[in-house]
Length: 173
Image (cartoon, rainbow, N blue to C red; front, side, top):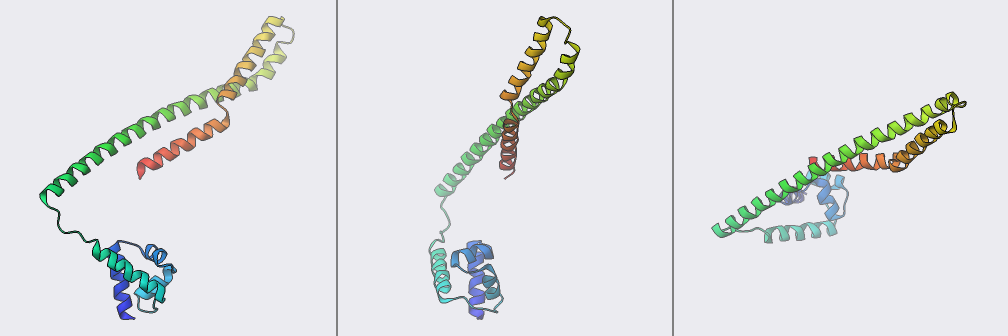
């Protein structure tokens, strides 16, 4: 059991995996990996075979120290990747600010339309005795408010908020 314990812990650390990662690869429960590492249980034969194959693979993947040319190439690739990441972050930040402005404007128009629609019944009651032209202005205000609500329905506001949240979370990671 001690050999399993040492081998499994070393294998997991060499692969830079968690117990859950290793358990998923071996096809066993995480608690079995934990108990095996503690020396309290042993792995099934199939899991031991998989662990051995993983160890062989990791041992074959060990690279010698890179030469100067390779080191320079890696440094250049890392610099290019950093530049690309900075550009992507800048683009994402621009998109985020644009969406926030769009959301603020949509919320403002939505709220204005709702307020207008709330006032219309009172205005209609005051304007009953007024000429038709003035009453038509109230109908026009109602039409404009309803149009704003169609352009910026609550569903669109929610979609904008979700997109903003996704972008913010993506920028954190």
